[in-house]
Length: 261
Image 1 (cartoon, rainbow, N blue to C red):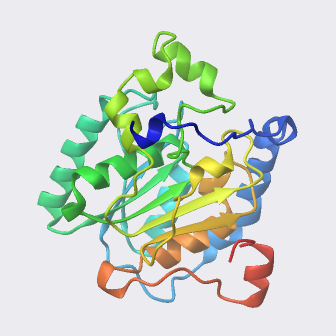
Image 2: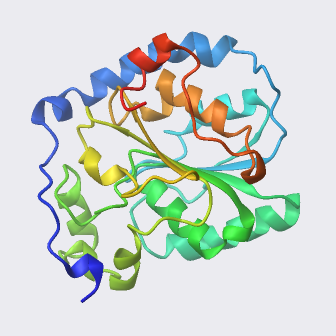
């Protein structure tokens, strides 16, 4: 029996309170991070390496525009996924693999992947297929431990796969989802997530190169959340040979922004 066939621990659907306040909280997070996004000068200018940003389920490149602008300001080349709205089609993986190969061959250097929600699930699979081309992965509220489990978007997903159970759409893919990618990975999650269960957004085992980081905020606001932006700015500076786990800049940041650290 495969590990994914074994009985999974019970994971509750996100709180209806968190779900109902997602939009309002995301707007607040965008406002709170605006000074940082607009006026921050990177202490160490980015090295210009390419960063591919993948949007979440039912979202498009419009949703990641503020994040990509921030990445550009840090001194990196931000790249949109250019596939329109993310309808969770498995065939996106083949098209994204071609895009990764093209970026790698054109730029001549490894690229970083940042995936928001379902975009992070795709990012992990891309890194498993082409680890020699990927510098690191950062996932934002990505339920890679169980896309097939209860969440507040599952009914939409079921419609898109013609009422099949999600894991039946591509069994091999879903069996592999929980497995870590062989590259440095930062899994960001929030216990106030109103869209997906936060327990599914974490690596089962942390290692030197695989770190889980809890932040405070909404699912829809992760791409503009101040604490998340600080993580991204810190992680993008690193290569595998200089990798070190993320640590808050101060005791205040540790206490306020990163409950798990």
